[in-house]
Image (cartoon, rainbow, N blue to C red; front, side, top):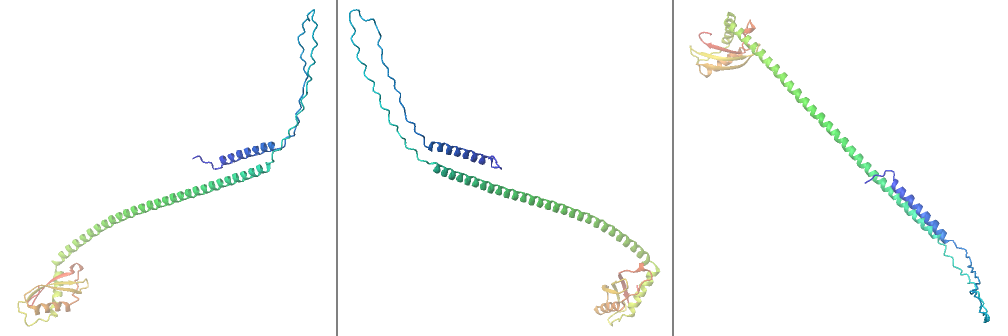
Length: 284
């Protein structure tokens, strides 16, 4: 369909139609005017036929020629008066005005239809533009969300790698520290300071041990003691004991009453988990 944004085609057709109507009105008006009557005149001419003259016979006298019949002039016809045609110019003018109003209304309706059509097209165009804009915004938001998610995942990956590296380094340092501490403790345990430290602990526990009557002369108990760096006893576990329940309870009570245990002179001698061997005859 050919677009005509300036309504050139409808306007041209309307102008041509107006010109045709105006010409029709002029022709109709000319035919409607009365025509002046002109009487008809007839002219007549008397014509006398002259016979061919031949020499008269020598002996016969010519007969007298008959007199020509008179020519009777026909009377002129009376003029015929034509009745004037009725004057219908007013009706034609009214019809022309009515047709003009109809055409104007048609043009106005066409203009309104074109305007409505243009408004509808503008509305659809704006809706398409708005939909395209919203689509672009949604696509941009989605792109940014995907980029942010990728960045977050990348940051988490780098953070995990960094944490793993730090953990490995820390574990390595801790293992090394434990190895170094274990080596120092091993060296210290074989020293005179370790023997003095264990003797001090055994003496304190023995001084608080209320030996029950059921304990025999060969009573021997191996005990695992858990302590804090300040010597506070937080756990007692009888590993083995040849005494009855009363003897075992007395040993545990003696160890707890000895808390806090004596501190070693050398920090390397400290052991969180001590294994103590308690006997009635001697201390190991």
